[in-house]
Image (cartoon, rainbow, N blue to C red):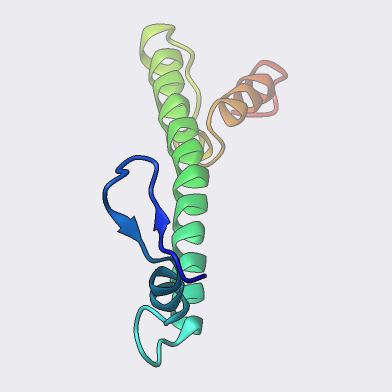
Length: 109
């Protein structure tokens, strides 16, 4: 390829394809350790996954605490305080529902 390629966006400036290929074939950093790049990508993916999972857990726990407060103080259902609070924080709304079921069946004092 003796003639330089003419770029369509700028018809007056020739582009040397061989020079571009030579630049692109060189590594960005001499002696770059690719295991660090791969490790960084893995850590970023793991952090995003943890944020996604933890966000759901935190929302479920907050909803459980709100339901506990509503049931205990607004509706006046006298559930045991500490066990119900712990279950509502750990299991959220499902835990509150289970505690209510146990209470109404007479299994929870």
